[in-house]
Length: 240
Image 1 (cartoon, rainbow, N blue to C red):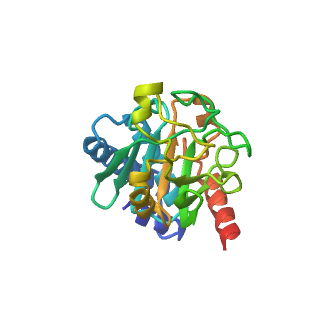
Image 2: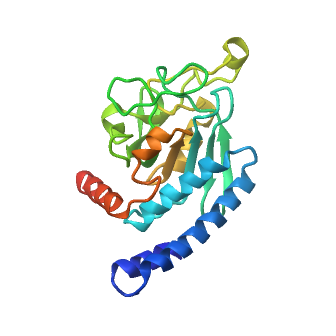
């Protein structure tokens, strides 16, 4: 409903679009947040709320709707299952599993993030998944960062989803954490194909951490329509 209203507003076919769209969008977002939180006991409600708000901001300002949403909660230690994948058509949980963070983002818990090439750190914010490919880690999935200065170097940094043997819950017993990546959200080899299959082709991934500093630099955190529309238009032009 919110997407339909936004497109009518952009076409100039409705008046009072601001208040009308805001009211409907907020209602729809709250309903979706409640549904996803209910489907995934133990997930941080704030992480879900910000993921949905960022995704809806993108869709309302030119991005195509997605069928899947992945949420990573980097406030949780790597010893916990902190990756969730949701089916947005049925509002159901598809997977809750382990995911690695960058080796220079922290030991057991990520606390430092970067968009810089060679930083070996994870990035936060909203991503759009792209094409899958077979690389040195097997089937992998490229992503495009949608947030300038926060994650838009993802392609250049080769930040991809892939399986890795160091994402092994057995390591938690010996060293208190799973292994770490060079910045990629690596997953267990046993679930890598399922993760790639479910997320490839234009789904959303949102990496969250309760840090005010990164939120202040996000165009999506407190939705800035003009800035977001420009970001999406530039990305589309770059990929075409």
